[in-house]
Structures are given as structure tokens and as C-alpha cells.
Image (tube, rainbow over all chains, first blue to last red; front, side, top):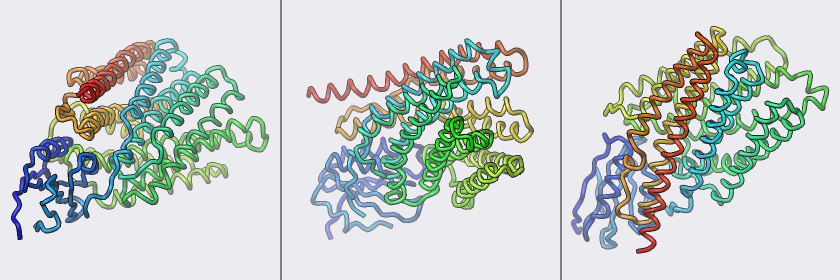
Length: 86
Length: 415
């Protein structure tokens, strides 16, 4: 399986609006083969809307009510469904 | 779950929220001027015409206008609920609401029942228009949560409250209803204060307190049962009131106790937050929760004037706290969604210094409101002056935020 480079942002302890601001900044700096792995307490609906408007793809993995993994990439070569998240 | 087609069209344009918030600030300025002009009349009794006018300016003009404007933003962006043709609906609701508030307030001031009936009817049309477009979406699209359930209950209460006041205004025509004047007024007051305003504050708290301030979760029992129980108590109380059963005071005590429980729970959750930082909005939340709790205590011990002032003051503190989160968020969100890379951080949208001055003026207003009850009613005029200045600052802050947004968009569009 192809290896992609993960850029991790653990926003579990960050106060709003830092998770959104940091994630929006970081996803714009992603290079080919990279994806942003955002660990967050809530589903970040506004960030996902920004992804849609800016042609980023994302995958949402809900662990439980207050723990979400969000994978974001702009590279069509990155298969988000292949990425294993613990 | 992959890209799920969340459309930016679902997110309301920033102009929707700004028009509601600025209109609400204009009603706040009207309330401030009213306090400056009629301090003695307002202080004479909580049932006086002038007090009723002031209460409607604050709770209908300021609170309801802001809350409905905020719902246009919160439903799609936070609850993932889309409102069909949001901009058109917002324009209609905004104009109708502004006319309804102005008509109701003026009719109360001059004592015109016919005009009050007209104002109540416009309010009813406005509420039905808004609620019919949102409540079904909350049932079908929103993820089931304490917040979405609370919003449904709040909107239901608002509708029932406006129906009650429309019947009250019509009561002067139909003799049967006029016999229930006191009962309908009591039902209207309870549904507005607790069913609509307080319930919506609770719903918003469940959603934003944990998210904005990184607090532990509310206890599950509170999230699951609190608002349905409160609504059930209100409904039973309304029926008992209409049937003229002598139980209203017992229900009031129960409701006061529930309000105190919620405020204490939220204060505790906030105290346990993981990254304690004292910005203006968190101080406004503390102010709001403390004063609403105090209001419930004052109400249960029959200090009605004090209770009314404290409740109104607390509610408006929540409104400012939410506005200072919502407006910077919308500026940031819409700029980012347009792909504008140099969008300012949310903390840069509204001047921290001016927000702090706003907060101090607000505390000053509270101090002079209290002094007007304890020392001399003329202190109410001083409170009005401070409230006037803080609302001018508030409008300036909203204007600055919109200027940042439109300037960046213009630069972006010009390449």
C-alpha cells in the first residue's frame, strides 16, 4: 500500500476558534502526497464546508461523541479510504 | 464518511446576521433613550406602562431579533441544517420583525388595543413564517442532540407565546377571551421568558460552552432530560393557569429551582474548563449566568422588579457574548470559503480593547440599574446613558467587522 505523509493536528485541547483557524492554515500548505489528520472533539462543519468550496477531499471518522478524526487532502492521488486511523 | 456535499449556500451570507444584530442594537438604543427619558415612570411599578414598554424593547426588540438572526447562522453552520432560500426568508423575517416590534412597542406606549392587535398579528405571521421553515428541518435534518431538541422546544414556545398574546389582544373584541386576560398574560410571560429565551440559551449553551471554552461535557442527565422536563412543566403550568387553578406559584418555584440548577451546572462546567482564559465573552457568560440565577432567586422570594432587571440583564449579556463569537467567526468563515488566504484571525476582527470597554460599560449599567432600585430612580437614567454608549460601541464593532470583510472581498475580486 502506498505511504502518504501525515500532517497531524491534535486539536482536542484547543479552544475555539483555534482548531478551525489552524486546520484551515495547515490544509493550504499541504503538498502532493500529504494529508492533514485533524483530531478534534466536534465535527467541524464549517471547516468541511470550506473544504467543499475549495475542492479539498475529506474523510470523517467518528470514534465517539467527543472524538473525531478528520482526514483532509487536496491531492487526488491520496486515497483517504486506505488510511488506517487508530 | 466522506465529502457529504455540505453546500456553502447553506451557510447564510454575513449580511443576514449583521442586519439582525444592527437592528437589535438600534432597539437597544431606543431602550436606553427610554430609560433616560422616563426613569421615574419605569421605576414606579413593574406593571406600569413604561416598564412594559421597556421590557418589550429589550426582550422582543433586542433579544428576539438577535436570537432569530443568530439562529439563521447557527442552524446551518453548527447544526448542519439547511434553510431553503435563507437570504429571502431572512429579509422577510427581518422586515416583518422590525415592524412587529415597533408596532407592539408603540401600541403599548399609547395604549392602543387595535394597534397592539395589529402588531401581535404581524409578530404571529413572522414567527409562523420563520418557525415553519426551520422546525421541520430540525426534525428531519439535524443530528439528534440536546441542542436541537432545545431549539425545537424554544421555537414551539415562541409560537405558543405569540398565539397567547394575539388572543390577549383579540380578547378586547371577544368577551369570552377577555375574561381570561390575566391568565393569557401570565402564559405569554412564562412562555417567552422561560420557554423561548431561557430554553434557547440552554440549547446554545449545550452546543457552544463545551466547544468554545473546552469544558467537560454537561452531565448526561441534564442534557437528556432538563429541557423536555422544563417544557413539560411550562405546558402543565399553562393549562393550570388557563383553568384558573391556584397552582401557578408552586410551578414558579419549581421553574426558579430549575433555572438555578442549570446556571450552577454551567458555572461548574465553565470552572472546570481545560484552558482557563478570561476573554470578554467568558466574562459575559459568567455575568449572565450569575444574574439569571439571581433573577430566579429574587423571583422565588417575590422581589419581582429586581428579578425582571436581573433576567433582562443576564439575557442581554448572553447576546453580546454570542455576537462577539458569531460575527468574527462569520467574517473568517466566509473569507476562507472564498479562498482568501490572508483572512484575518477571528481575534483580529473585533477590537479586544473596545470589547473590554463594552464589558465595563455593561457592568456599569448593571450597577446603576441596581442603584435605581435601592437609592433613587434617577439612577436609571445614568444606566440608560451607559447602555446607550455601549450600544454605540457595539454598532461600531459590528461595522468594523463588516468593513474588514467587504474590503478583503473587494481586494480579492479585483485580483
